[in-house]
Length: 405
Image (tube, rainbow, N blue to C red; front, side):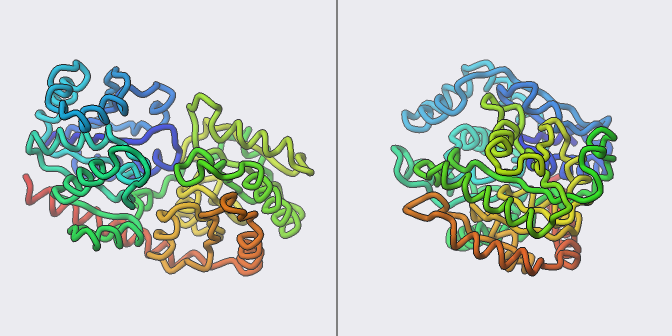
């Protein structure tokens, strides 16, 4: 059996963890299958670290440029067929699709939604055109984007694609609600990272810097996000400084460890942003910014030894739950609140979805954070539930594969 994985996000340790867990599970379940993961025009730094080393797993990066722009034009001006049959990179991808027995669209965030990934939509369209068995494994998606030219067409095409998957699982309650409104058939699921329990040791030089007592904090600059384009970076940063001050008071003998999730970015990603936060904080000596070169497996080991995790990125919360570590979610997007809703952990969520917007200075969120800090939510039962859901979804997928083959 030839399995092809497309649309894999890169440059993010959280997406890396979800990818590794799913590919490891597939490789173990189907040792005789050839599993190929295809990227289109990404930098080597963007996907090199996420690779799973297994004898039946191969990675391929097809050189191609202007993915999003050309894909959008192809939909708007009706030359999808021409583009994907003439441009060499797309022709090679089409050959890979034709050679596959099963195609999987990798777990992802709201690419089919406000992030408007025309490229992902084009790849999905190619797979459907080739009439290959097609799965979308445990993503978030929606709601319908608004405010840009072509949004109605984009969402109409999204709805068409989402309704034609042979297997669709969904990882959060909010996306499930969107799917219910759209009349989609799906398997209720959770993030695929819960399929895996990595046991990578923390490098000695990192362990020495961490010490025995620390809390993990993963901020998020937010203004890159479509919903925060008009937000005040100064207000957002100020909120994080107050969060760190409260952590210092609650854990006076612990370091505050900033753990970058994004890597391989032209602007320095999370690492550069975290260094700027440390430099501006009143007690920079309390703060340790770790390098962005640590794999998702190592990051989970670091999280496992933390006293608390505070995360404004989705997978930092996934890592905390997967390692049964108390956490507070600074929930900036529905995938975070939806995950916690599935697991009954809503009390650990602080709503920052309007932070820095329309006069929101973060004081209400800060009060919520202080209350959550005083009463951490137990995580052990939720971890068991998350792993059970992830396993059940994978078994449903395996049954579907059997029926499609």
